[in-house]
Picture 1 (spheres, rainbow, N blue to C red):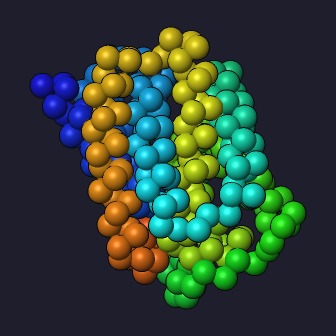
Picture 2 (cartoon, one colour):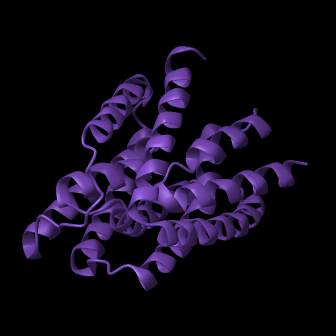
Amino acid sequence: MEWIWVAGASLLAGFIDSIVGGGGLILTPVLFSVFPNAPAATLLGTNKSAGVWGTAVAAAQFSRRVALPWGALLPAAGVAFLASFAGAWAVTLISADFLRKLLPFILVALLLYTLAKKELGRHHAPRFAGRAELGVACLIGLLIGFYDGFFGPGTGSFFIFLLVRWLGYDFLNASASAKVLNVMTNAGALVLFGLKGHVWWHYAVVMAVANIVGSVIGARVAIRHGAGFVRVVFMVVVSALICKTGYDAFLR
């Protein structure tokens, strides 16, 4: 029965994650529910081992239909990998409890800003080019990469928001670019979790296949329906993240 639950959750997580991020909102609670006595690091590592493949496949799907700024994205992805590895290492030394209580308020501010700026992310109008775009992209990779390794919930949504707000991308292009960065943050954290033995590889393989299937479907839906659709899904997922992280921080 555990296999059915984790595979189904991984498929749905891949679908949501490929559009706007937030797949951990689905898969992580299921893992903690199905395996209540397992070490948290093992469940987080197993989650990363599934998500990295689905996100990679979604990135490949997007790259065939969306013109990605590889000159800025590839260096930023390298920075994100190193930052995520550092964040995963830091969480073995420092408690992330302060972020647990702060996160719902950050997400509320993000949602309100997106709602207030009705044209935000509807049109693709990059604000920078060349070294300026590279510098801002690397800064985004550094900040959110470290966050993903250290804590994680909402990483894909944070990537999308900053790519829209700071770089001027529309939601579709931001979602596509976020996948490339998110692959590397997942990989960075996964390397550390794997080295420390915090991955259940027998579950990871099944979950990865399911996650890939969900990601392929989600990426195709996003490409077909465009930036407006992605913006709506983004707000729905952020709203769900607010409820989930608020419950975890103050009511559990």
